[in-house]
Length: 557
Image (cartoon, rainbow, N blue to C red):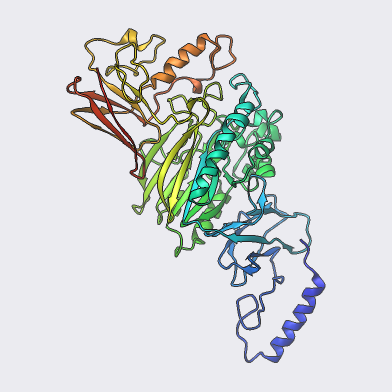
């Protein structure tokens, strides 16, 4: 927006005149809240972007505003100024870190209007304002999606009806569940990346995803590796630290900044792009932050209002940690050092499975990383992920700024499914007794033979519990508990059957990609080996916040 230069010239003359008249009485400079400052916005030397963040016609103080490199805060009148180098190729957006207890009044596509595009041809100081409204965030719900992979049926490993399933199966469930949650407070959404895939953008683009998904609740998106442009499509053999911005062009044109922050209640949310593209977005990349993003992150965390914020939630696509809790990101130790003073929660996608990791920061603050399953299951051929977790989104409830509950919300064929239990007799959670013995070897073998053919009478009887979203499962009985390294039998049996009845891919033999094969890469299948198989066992599962997810009795044989 243009600023009236004649007005500012007149104002400058007036200010200088007042300064001359009262030079012995005024020490404060205009813009610093002195007596000579009436709160009106004015141009500053070297400021190319300026504006006001307001609510109900009044400025909001202390709001962090950034151009992706610089971070500043609004003054007592809600004003800000940024020295953005608008002609530089990486200065494309201005975005606010939405303050706690506020929401932008307007929507901007899938999300709230927390960002605006910079006019890179402007020869004047651009004015970009943000208007907020107050909202009670003492209790709110966060709904998390990951890896939707809507491709319009593109490719030999993608179901032809993926768009139909997304629009007619998932979205109605998402919207109805969000509506139910509104009774407890405001509702927000997060997508942890891989909305689509670049090779399918001619059939289903990121803009198509945005338009299909836009609804009543704002959704804050993180970039996945497949949401990047490939270097070859940009006429490049590879990308470096200086050219990472090129791989974000299609995404940012549709969804805005690739990294940014916002606040909900007493949590500061940071959305990062942790895919560092080298040669391509399907294997030729690293889990790493580029240098510009790393420098911005440090400034963003320094701008946190510690009087309000109790913890940080990081949304990124690729996991920060391995299953054993060790940092997996290439420059992750530097990132963790930036976060060291706060309890952390990571919301992750990428791995197409459920996984919960608990560790701590360098200063001993608690860290939880939640890896979410793919919304697309095995790319929509079935609404199951390869380790048995159903295609689902996850609901997090926050009370007084503290996470208190985590709930999986499956849809379609898996509606209301929360766990699977395997025993040799029918019991709670099992509709029918399995026709083969469940023993200590059941589910551990990768073979086309059914477990019935490899089970041995000498094996100890066992119970298998696949409980996605559980941080721990307790067995009240005398026996031994082991995990992981076990297959989800429902998925495994389905896989072999599917190869005979249509398959999970478009290869001639019905096979798909390697990532569509049954996997025992899981931390949520527990095996219980009883000392006395004639005595039933009581099973109870708990989430990361120590809520009981359910309790029942299982008969072993």
